[in-house]
Length: 356
Image 1 (cartoon, helix red, strand yellow):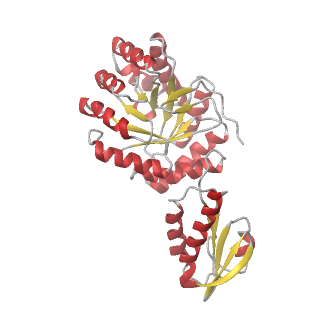
Image 2 (cartoon, one colour):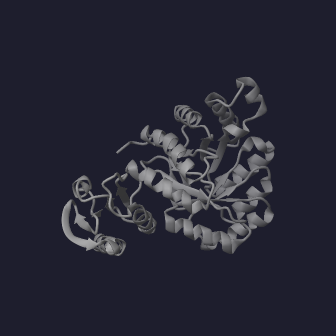
């Protein structure tokens, strides 16, 4: 197990971010926050998909006031995304928000002091979000372009403001759409600040593009022990983000309850329509929280042996498929029964593990 870099822990609802060998998965709703019903529906879907913390955009007073109703029914701790209106931050705090995303340098110092006092009284942390695409003009002039050093200097500016307000429950993020800059910025931050780090690659694109960028950048950082919470940004329904975040953390032993689906890349030996089966089973296991491995292999020549670590699997042939468990062939089944039998065996395996 990789040991996380020690950071100052903060409390967010019933969660602790930092100070432990864990990474909290979070996402952000894309509903209008003032639409309480729609927002809660999405939060519940995110919870079912494995999300642990959810952020909401607070664009106006109506959004901020809606926090109270959402908080009353939300299964997850809530984060308010605030930009330039200090009153929205104060209203969100008064209505029970668990964490705030706010850059203090965007607000007058007296407003920051008021927010910091209110947040400190209620033990609400503040995340400072540094983004390479929105660095201060003076820093861009100084460094010529977005650099890791520029992002750290920007963070210091905001951190110093909160420290002047006697506020230390801080979380930091250093997001970029550039993989190399993301890695360098977080590595430098981990050696500079004592605060928990929120990992993310911003503007990462669609599910495939985001998965590639996020796993390249965030996987590197996680392997180095950097990061305390993570959001995999995807240009899609936020539930899609869980499809990348959970397996990524699971690969490093930092998340349990992910079904590991393995499948061969196919070759000229394949004699059945395997890919639709892989896609259907992948969709099916995405709804299951269990530490099991399922294999779908292309042929019976090497399939059972190559996938011997799988709890359950199939290897297709011309007219039938071999059903195997832990590399041992159990029976031969007709091709048109592969999906039904696999789902049945997966359900039985999950039920057996839950009863134990």
